[in-house]
Length: 85
Image (cartoon, rainbow, N blue to C red; front, top):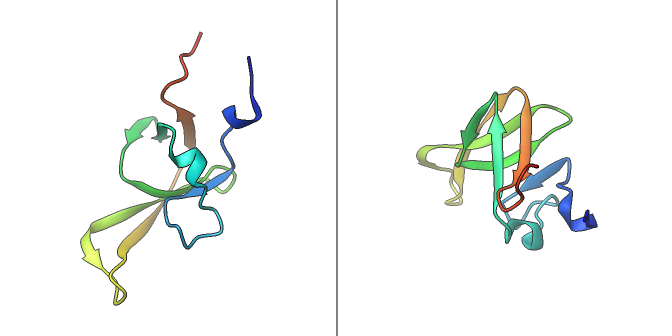
C-alpha cells in the first residue's frame, strides 16, 4: 500500500523558518544515507542537487542558530519504519 505521505520530498529541512520545513514528515522517523553511510546529524538535504547540510560542531551564528556546512554527494532519504521487501 503506497500512500502520498510515503514519498519523501526532494528537499527537506529541520529549521522551522525554512520554506522546506514539514513538521508532519519530520514527526516520522526519517533516515538519511549519504555516500552509503547513515547520517544522524542532517539539518537539511536536497536529493536532486546532491547535498546535505550538517551542523559544524557546537558553533553558533550571531542569532544562536547552529552553523552548518554543505557536503555534496549522493543522498538517499528513507522512512526507518518502512521495511524493504
